[in-house]
Image (cartoon, rainbow over all chains, first blue to last red; front, side, top):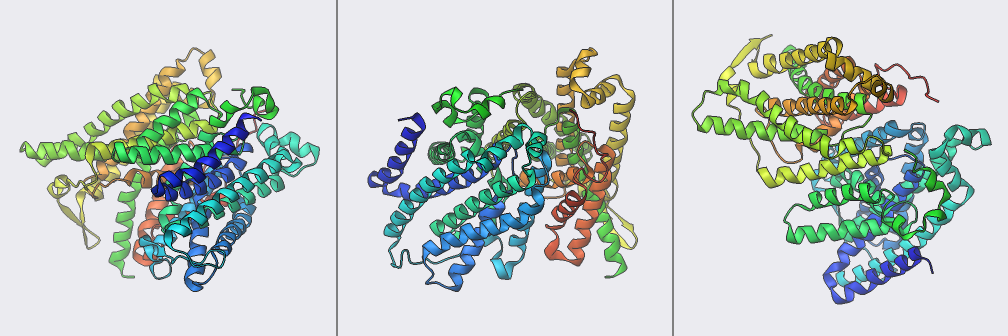
Length: 318
Length: 301
């Protein structure tokens, strides 16, 4: 069995068994898994050499869509809400992606950032519709047709999130190994050559963008139903930066990286919040700087033999 | 909308644009020379404001005349720029010039996170507001409205002086010309015998001082709270991107454009006030991704 697989199994066991010993850790685990799914989405873009400082747009947009739906129809099943989140994310990705993917590098990042700030500012301003900066509350909706108490609901949600994470991690891996995924990686190494082969760079990146948006949308839906609250804060640019942070920290070589990154992120956040009051950002900053200098390809790259990823080796060039 | 409101909006916009311009100038300078967008640049703005508030508060407690603020504000900026800017360049930036652009962005983002908590640890979360200098300079009547001289005269003139000084520094001084050379081509400059490491340090410190100066100058006019740097960074992004990366003259025009647009929307469409800078940036990037004032570059093969 390869090391990444062992890491996947270890993470799944950790996520499912830890709450039996420490019941309070369920919420951080759900949020961590949701974070990991968003980072998984960003890692698709990082494979293509693009970095978006605005994907909180999709997390936040879907979160609000879910909140509106749950307030409108309180009986709507949580499973449907999750699906709605992913769907809204994908739809937003289709629209935003259609023009954003024409840009590369810093322009791509900045345009994403600007768009996410437009949403952030709009959510805070249109008070009557969005509840302003206080956000919107949503009641606990039924799960698989059953109405549950908070504790039970969180358990089911956690299991669902972990199963979804496994499934999506596998799908993203399949995608990155497919022709479309390899074309995405080629976008980073040489876009002109990619076009010469007869593959449209625009379409390749657009598909990748929509997938990353859908994953971020699903993650937004998870945040919304786990917390029972959506705020414009979810769409702030610092949140987008944190998603990128998690993806790079974990590494994009293997999907498990996104979840390792999210795990480290949530752990440092909990740990630093408990022992170093209010300095968790500082600790994370130092962790990331250490990471960039010691293992620039992320934690998951430490698990893989170097030769197994021929595409990534080329990226090592200065 | 009555006549006075127009005038008021113009004055508001110009004094705000002066601050925006100073911050954006530092960011565009760093990008021009090092090809890195410094996500921590807003932190220098925040640190400059805190430092100015602390020094100003101390001076007032010593019984000094508020006029000393005119000296204290730039002093705070220089302290912050040299200390934090110098530290960041020597400890981080010079180690990442040859790394993947994604990692470069991430390193400056980490620096932003560290600075953010650093401010909270040192200055706490309570707001700071030391406005003696604004009251000291008093007010003036223009176009039938009363406006503080600090915002009416001091801020725009500082911005203009800095603009002219920086332009002539880059054009006529030896160090300035070396900076321009490095921004054109790093490798060739090295081959020509320019000490690129030193030039990078100088550029970064100057840029940090500019960011901190804007913060120091803004601190007497608004109350200084945590998160102010994170907000400034996106606004200066908007200015820099609208102007075109690395464009100094463009940044001046873009800052005035965004400053005016914002202050007019405050009076005419208050709901859109926060949105306007970003909307302008999105529109400009959509139609001219290289910015309003950039010339499209030939592709380097």
